[in-house]
Amino acid sequence: MNLRAAKTSDLELTYRIKNKSIKPYVEKIWGWNESNQLKIHNQSFNANDTKLIEYHKQYIGFLVIKETDNEIYIENLLIEMEFQNLGIGKTIMEQIVESADFKKKRIRLKVFKINTKAQRFYENFGLEKISEMENHIEMEKTYQKTP
Image (cartoon, rainbow, N blue to C red):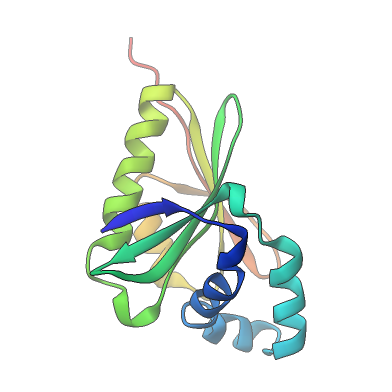
């Protein structure tokens, strides 16, 4: 597995990955309108914050992180459904947690309420529910200062 910085030319690739990873959840919550989803993706895609996940010479996911002085915010960690449960997301999260610990930063993210599998995944890395919205749960892992 490798991560590579995204380029602006990866817009279609990241949309394909979004389609093959979270479409079932979006369909259940709001319905999937192809033109609306494409428009939203085109407006929100930022190659500077995005890393593509490569597995066996194939791009199967992407990671979007926004980092501030005291926080690592995981905007997206999307892996196509057929490549889930292979340890890819686990490896990426282990690296994020290690980086957050080293930098003494908290980790924060939002996950769909109906995606209980993802909630359990993040709980395994010490993230806890801190708030609930209509369709999302906000989770956080605070930096633990050692005495």
